[in-house]
Image (cartoon, rainbow, N blue to C red; front, side):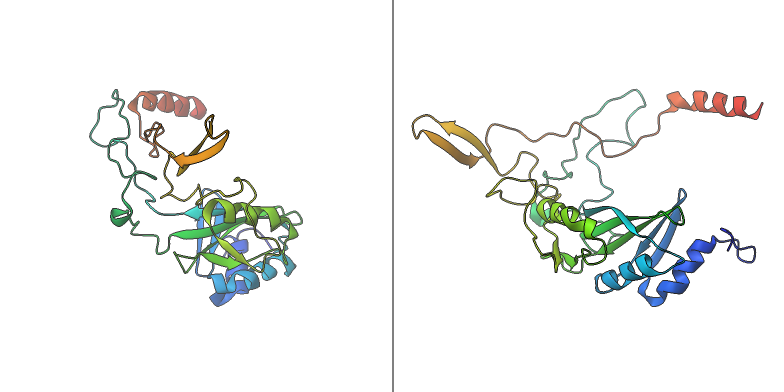
Length: 247
């Protein structure tokens, strides 16, 4: 089968996915040469098995798995539209991760759920890659079935997502923290986790031991922008490069 079907003009691989996954497919996106599919958590295992076992798909390798927190997704603390191209601004809006009050937390309009799980798959046989995502149905206790039975390499990836995001992988044989210390409070990659942390550790010479205390020595601040801003200084260089390629 050719990569592009002459009748529809759509990639044959996309049509294969739609035909084989059917109603289990929530959505399929093509962007920048990459294909992303979204499925419901209850179909997570079934779709994974199809992607691995079907001869025309044959995604025999899971390359990566990660959690995602979509809280405040698409928002930025940096001024981007009302500043000059020569200006430089710090994060001043106070809406970024770790800086908003929980009662007034931002909710992205186009993401129905807060937490998601994303896997990247590789088919060595067909030389293809695929991204698969599921949005967890419960924001308070997010979870999806474990993929260890389909791709054993997902073991530590799922433990990492559990540690950093608090996402529970049902059926995982050894789901425990893998990166943070014993007794760590919270999940550090969640957007509502304070940038300065919940506690700090120091040695108390009077008690002659290490003590945990609320953080008081660090003020939260934002130094890295989350928004890409167009800069007119590069327009001329891009135009010259395009003209050079046409020669």
